[in-house]
Every structure is written in structure tokens, then in C-alpha cells.
Image (tube, rainbow, N blue to C red; front, side, top):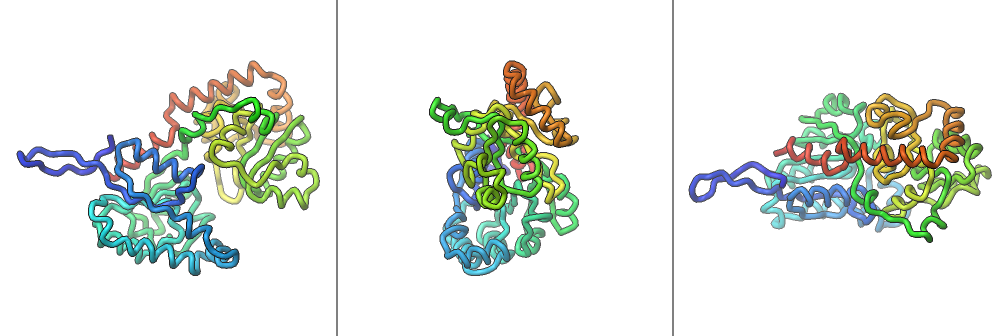
Amino acid sequence: MCLHKGVLDFWGKEVKMRPQILYVGQLWEGGTCLERMKALASLGCQIKPFDTTPWLVNYGRWKLTVAHRLNFGEPVSALNHALQHLSGKLKVITHVWIDKGRWIYPQTLRVLKDETNATLVHYTPDPQLVHHKSRHFLASLPLYDLVVTTKPFEVDQYTKAGARKVLLVLQGYDSRVMNAAPSRHDREIYGSDVCFIGHYERHYGNRLRAAATSSGQLRIWGPRWMRYAFFHPWAKPYVGGDGLWGSKYCIALKCSKIALGLLSKRIPETTTTRTFEIPAAGAFLLAERTEDHLNLFDEGKEAEFFGSDEELKDKIAFYSREEPLRSRIAQAGHSRCIKSGYHTRNELEKVLKAIA
């Protein structure tokens, strides 16, 4: 059970109370934000959800384009207006948890604080200072009692930007990847020798083009890959669509012999959510070699890594045909995730201890 500060009962004995959390985030089915909220509930927290998804999608194309690029406009102001007008409904709230709060105004946080006197927590798995920048978030940083990041390269930047307390946690995996069970039909649809599931970046495109020369069946899913394939004919046979989410994402990992863990070069990324989700799903992880990856999984025993296109192609060719060895490494990686506690629930327990 997750605990909050104690109060005294009739006899003067301290009684522990569960945190009452106003959880503000994108609570669409299949998203990691929803899974974090469920994990907090499983730890004993009482949750009042506030789904920001309608303000991120239910407007015209141009309004949403301006909002997402400039953090400005009707969707942004309407979201803050709705949050500020929760007055009278938050009397028992002890914590306000903002997930990816790029659009949240400082004034909105002040209103929530005045209404509840709650602890203000911000969580993001994204590089919110280096890449997903927002003037609203920067102005709000000093108001949060705790900011939580999964990016080690941003910890010092948070402090310099005025954050009062910073906590670094792993991105981890959630229960979805453990529970998905592919059917024979799923294997016909999603089966592959090598797969990559994630958004398009130039670095990813270059690595996947190299992988295509060594793979009998390469499959790619993710935002902007359909557009990429339109302009790069080599990719057309391999791109399966602009994304897989929820159970389909997990099933596709399980239906591939090798799942690639590519790292963004827009930021100094050394791990990503795929680092944990692929082995947790029981799939074979072939990722870019970094010091953090080597600390998380034993190379050649629990996962495999590469440092060049030639090594990538060689390992794809080798492990595609070495099924018993590939299966042993995939199972060992799965066991390592459990043994080392890479589940999101364990990481969120660290957050709850920090705000207790």
C-alpha cells in the first residue's frame, strides 16, 4: 500500500492515509500514461482521473497544428480553463500529478495548489527540456514540489531551470507487454524476422535500410513511416502502417524473431522504453550498444547490441537462423526484467517514497 503522511485518530495514534491523487494526463487506451495511472492505483493510491486527450485531438487541423508546435491557442487555453474550474471537487486531493505538462500554465498550478494545498508532481518519460520544449513548462518548474524524469542528461538542466527537487527513474515496462498472447492469426499478420516499432527519424531510416539488406522479412510500424516510404521506395515493402498501440504493439513484438531497439540522435539517448518493453515481452532485443544498455542486460546472454551497420547486419543474419540460442537469450532478457525490477510499478514506488 502506498502511504501518505499520518494523522491522529481519537486515541492519538497515527493512522496512515492513502494519497488522493488528481491524475492529469493523456488517458487513451494503449498509452503509457494510462498504464502509469493504473500502476499507482495498484499501489493503493486513490485516483481522480482528468483526461487531457480531448483537448489534444478534438479541434480543427490548423488549431491543433498551432497548439502542438507553439503550445498556444484555443486547445491550450481551454484545457487550462477546464482544470482551473475543478473548484469544489478537489477537497480531499493530497497530490496533483501532471503527466507531460507542456500545456499547463503556472497559473493553473497555483489555482490547484490554493484549492487543495496538495503536493504538485510532474512526471514525463520524454526529454522535455531538450526536445519537447514549452515556455509554460519552464515557467511552471519552480512550482512543482517534485519533477520526475527518465532522462539522465536532463537532471542538471532541471536544477538549473529552477526545479526544487528532481528524481531520476527508469522508463521501465508495464503489464501490457507481459499479458499479450499472439494467436496463429496474429502471427500471420505481424510475423517478421526483424521489426521496428517507433516514430520516424533519419537515423532510424538509415539503420533500417541497412537491416533490410540482411533480413528476409523486415516490418516497420510507427508515425511518419508511411510518408517516408512514399519518398523512399526501398521502404514501401516493409512499412506496415503509421503505428501499433496497446495489445497490437505487444503482439507484434512477440511475433518477430528480432526486435530492434534504436536510439534517437536528436537527443543524447542511451535507453528508451523499447529497451525494457522488448525483453519484457519475451522478444529478442537487438539494440544500439551504450554503457547504460550494457549495465541493464548482459551482452550475448540477455540481449544483443551493435555499434555499426556491419555489426547490425551480421547479428541479424546470425540470430535469424539460430533459433535455440535466440530463444535462450530472449528468455534470459525476460527473466532479467523481472529479477532486476524494471517494471514501471517499481519505479513509481520510488516516486511515492519521494513524496510521502
